[in-house]
Length: 482
Image (tube, rainbow, N blue to C red; front, side, top):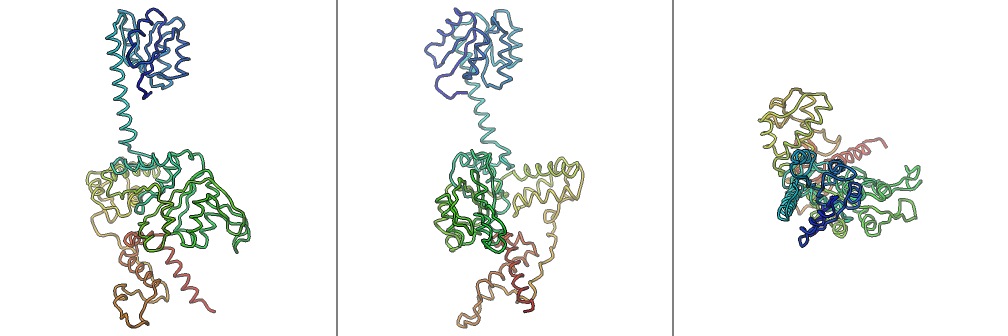
């Protein structure tokens, strides 16, 4: 429907004399009236430009006005129809209302009656738009893969709406498990690039030696394992969106090349001399504080400002008001269907537990909890006795601590290491060793729960797994016979 000052009205009336009277009634008021005399002309006029209001005489020379009314409803045109009936034709008016007419006028009617009916119809249109806006933009319970209607998420939905219409780079921040990739996919799906590729790269899950090839591709023979040409993520995302997750984990040596790609839209594959230009929108994400990474020298400041154009900060689950129950019900329904279980809700004490729990692993942790419940139990209602640790009220189930790397020196408390004499250079501990000690101590304190240790260390779990694998590989190399 139009938002212009003048309201477009289609008058369908075969009596030209009466039509002139109605048009005269509306002269001087904010209405643009188009008059047609037949049903065929009315259908053609609606096809050319859908009016806000249709004043429809039900008796037409070539068809019934009810046919016009049905056409408006079947096509979902959104026009409000006011039916004009003869005196004593209340049954006709009632039938018209049942078919979707907004109101009716009984001949003969005066100017005041017509204007009152039109104003009343326009006011109801205005209220309908308010309700629609509230439902679609203010009170959304699902959006682009997200579940939840909290005020904090309504704000996120609105930012995604605006970001999707733009070509600017988006920088998503938020704790692990808050749905950063879901957010990136929602932006892509709402954008003009929705029919083009969405390519995701996790910068923390790929060894730094292979990251350049993963993003920009390589040619055959570029390195030992390059047995054929390979298109990288930037090339595959041409015309679409490239999502760089855990961007702050990117090797500093690769950051200048990414910056140049962002500035020029072009790149050179590993081992090649040919420049390739692509049209790619960049969305990146991190669970770290990017400015802190810049201050620490691990992330280039110029790259940060090139990427940080449209920031989106995803709130943790414990700050999303009642969303935890909406999300839990969604996962319960999905997993119950998958596992052929009969769950259809939660007991009140379970909902209360969900609301109290801090959810350090955010939506991902809640998802795993619901799957655990569904796989191991059955019934119409999830009971408190079905909750896994640590939601069952007891201590978390102990996880076997990950064994230390064979042959590695014992882990020493970092505080104790820092307290060693500063005057004796032989006691200085390399920074890499201190990092290993901090990680192993955190994992030990968390009883082997790597994701929980990562949460308290402020890094991703993938980083811990990658570093521990590297330490073990190095130890194995040292232990292997010469």
